[in-house]
Length: 206
Image (cartoon, rainbow, N blue to C red; front, side, top):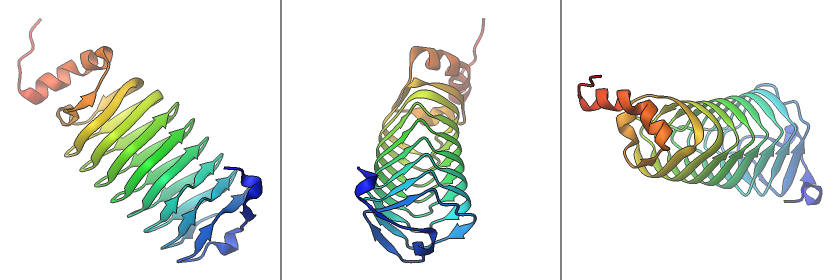
């Protein structure tokens, strides 16, 4: 998407229920804000800074967030189709109870990525550092984490149909038994061996 072909928009246009189509928000300082019902279609958010941004029931399609730094981004109940986060720095990205499809997170750092009780389809996390990825109660389909690092994974009570973390540096896994159906590298499987054995109630001896 060529941002130069989009109409400029400012923070004053971000109001509850606003529908923005083919707009570009660039270099804004957002502070704390709460905007329920915001709709973004083929928009670009670039090089912005913010504190706590709360976007309940966000609807977005074809929208890119690039080079932006936020203390937290809360999107409970969001519906996002065909989106991209690239080069972002977010302390906590909280999108519990959301429906996310065809979403890419590239070359970014997110300390906490919470997608609890959500539906994920065709999600690609690439060359990024994720502190905690919480998938508790989440339905996962065609999700891939490649490159970068994933410090802690929480897959409890989730349903997995295509979840590949074999290409990333994987740290701690809470409830490793919930990884049934996931794709792991041989090295990851060996590292998780004792935890998996404990989950199964097996006795490991030298």
